Image 1: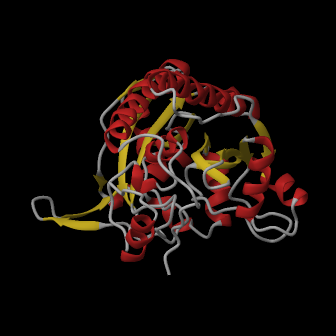
Image 2 (image 1 turned 60 degrees about the horizontal axis):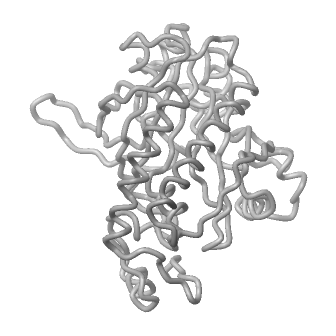
Length: 335
């Protein structure tokens, strides 16, 4: 049974061709605002990596990467899941200094993704990473950066609405910060996703902090790989999506692990075997810079700002037959 649903009475505000033009405006405007706000420079990034380097992300630890043989090198390459670890290595190799960072366009394939209104096997996002000093590995720096991203998103919406005044999307610039444990305490009888919907419906723009560790209930709010975010200094940025009447995650980000937090989290996650990989060895030896970084979904952001009901309205991917049937019946065109 399809997990896709189209709200009764939904109709896209923009035509197909207006949507394509609007996507271009969002990309160009947001990149400019984000790079200026966080002091980032654009760089090129890989579509695939050698798994022996340890640079591919394991996400929740169960997703299978897409891999293929490269006869000329004798290596079996993996299509990236994200670039969290690659970016940090790039900052080291390119000799970036504290206060400066990079961003890139990340395209990935997540073959095991469940398909619905928000999820596709094709992932497109702005991946960014910035060098910070050890003294800035704190909650204040995390919150300051989150607020900067939210301002960039809201400013992009204002530019978009000048071009297309018919767009009725409204965003809240004030961010409500809450830890995953505080969220569980507030809604103990709800599932993690239901908690996200409830808090975001009330406060509109929410950043849920400290994701990955076990809560008092005995379960984590959500899964996180142990080797990129520090689970005490990370989080998810959510906006209320009135079209679907639930939370829409736009970004997962955080201050990255140092040697101490990596050592602890590898043990907690039963991933001590990764200690021998190049990336992990360099981190444990203190050779990589302290950084903060994250990913910001391109299609997710377009979907939010344009008031779309399905991510397939703003990106081209592969969908199951039932999804096509549901969308066709509702007059929704998938790209």
